[in-house]
Image (cartoon, rainbow, N blue to C red; front, top):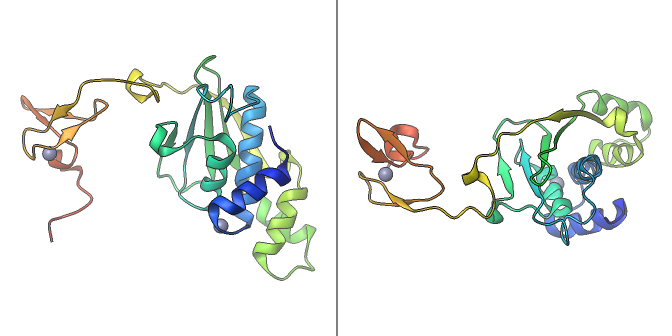
Length: 193
Ligand SMILES: [Zn+2]
Ligand SMILES: [Zn+2]
């Protein structure tokens, strides 16, 4: 594992700027790996880790940098809960840990550095200095990963009977004897313009 400063430099490059979210994300991910005993997430341990993120904000990019987990590798899973939290799963041991940023950390940052006016600057510094206990809640959890959720899953591709598009990873919906994609089954996030 790299140091906090090394990861922050990597995160800044990947994300485009350094911000409080990067500091939070890097520290959150470093703690998650430490709890699972994963030392080399981008090297020898790279097939051991699946990470669930619960928000699509700055910290998410930093978590991806530290863990090496990416959406396109199926090792990064997004649950749109709007919460600054992530769950790290060791697929070898089945151990998993969920880490959430504490709501009180913002107020504590204000107390620690009232002299800094910019909220982002204030939090950036305070989140570096703050103890893990003040920054995060850590919980051992169990994650029920289905075979089709593992990064290396190879399964058959099924065609939606309505739109004709292909569907991977058992994401089809069976309804009244028909095989449908989630869009055709009514889960659409768009309408034809
Ligand atoms: Zn940012
Ligand atoms: Zn369809």
